[in-house]
Length: 270
Image (cartoon, rainbow, N blue to C red):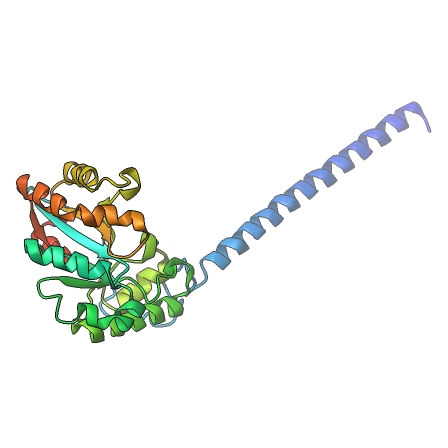
């Protein structure tokens, strides 16, 4: 083979290899893109945890609207005190006793399973207070599909209504985790989704209820939804033991305690 032919053959071979490599790269990109698309498609399948729809079927969501609230914007000094994860013996009665002593209304986001098991703890003791749904057993609703999330919340809804005599109209999902299926279930049950503006910080004040109360009093702003717990580990008692100081401290700053629904009626949502 002549030198010129060898050069031309070499160039053609290089070009063929380059084309094959480029083609492979394009196919690789296409395969990756297809894989990503399939993964995204899996994530967003109708009725899945991330999807807020049931696909092309009727959505069965009543008015078809759900709002999410962290707090409200207001120039007036209102604060909503909320408690999650109850009811349970020991702590829930202690909280109710303190609230009764200071005539403070609060909103209790109840676990349906606990409400059924400990109905006597809250029966006839929630006058002036408000109840919300916090799921059946504090499992992560954001990992459930639309049907499972709805079934969990409906089961809890019925148990809370039976235990308290009041059907909840508010939902706080465990850990504040939201997913499309949670939104869909909330719309079906005609719930308002309520998160929080400020949370108790018990770990920062071990064995110092007064210090913890002082911190919370300083951090509250008008329209705050304040998150506490009437169930949990021993460290959470710091907040509950400091509840009287928290109440008197906020009142000294001119704050009025209201339920979440009362707060929502008084101001525009942030």
